[in-house]
Length: 323
Image (cartoon, rainbow, N blue to C red; front, top):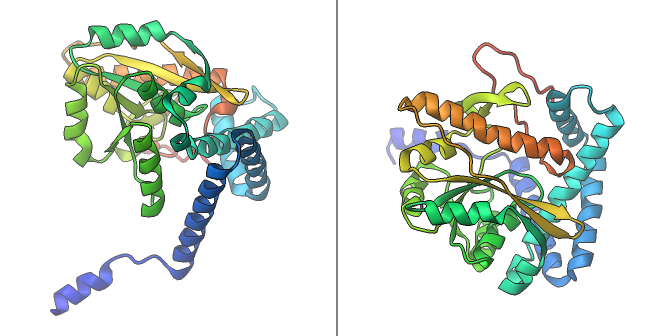
């Protein structure tokens, strides 16, 4: 091996022993929970998830503090400290229950999946958008309630769905998640640039739903719009794709209703088209985020508060998250 090649090889990042061990433990725990989810009755599995949510919330102070940061940025003094803790605890329970039931999706028939939903409000918006679109539709959702059930419900209802998402840092966990989604008929597309051709094909295919989760920090590639009155870097993909391919944008949210689900389909987001693409992407991204904000305001305890939504700041602005 040449000296240059040797240098390049040595410069490749290698996780520390402690980090590698932590990831192995995380993978082992995840696979153990999957094993349990496959064998327990659904009610017992959801009860276990609620207990695990409480355990994690109690043990991990950093998790609690990140949640409290976000709740304070969003709501200020609207809720007391105790109320914020209660919302944060329920958020962790919600996430644990969502993951637990997702791990069981491969066990359900199409009819069983549909039976988990007690009510669908606004289905006419979805049907109208699919009927009028020359190609596909963009279905936007957020990490609220059970975002994983959104796609499973759509496919079980007869609508082909292509979900855009990030790979997990552990390849084994990524494979597990994609295998479960494939079992219920969801096709996965990477959120990286390599996935763009498949997204375009989906939007050009009549009746196909392109599922996008649009509530997280957009990072340096995002666009700043208000979220709870505070500038937040937001993903601009939904607005850009809707403008470029002239397809409808339909917000769809799955909420927990006891141990079952309730789906809210919102009216089509009215897309502004002035001919100034940059301005239109900004305006339409703001409109999409307003819909998501409305859901978080309505159901704060079902949103994923441990995510640092306002982590990326506009140039020159100090950090908002303290933890």
